[in-house]
Length: 88
Image (tube, rainbow, N blue to C red):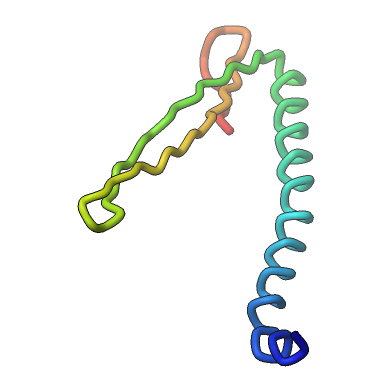
């Protein structure tokens, strides 16, 4: 096991770096969304959301297939007069 750690330390370092990045980025994104929603309400706006899903098929080899599904949500701030103030 000792040599395993020495041989593969770059992989473990990369995984640790990715984990730290995710741990720092997720709360920052949540705070950004909260600031945006607060700004929208200060303008007298209302927030609506729309979620879209895209499925992309791909071949797994040997005649097999699968698909990758991605879901995105778009938030829209609509002003009191009905016009779109911003999207996030």
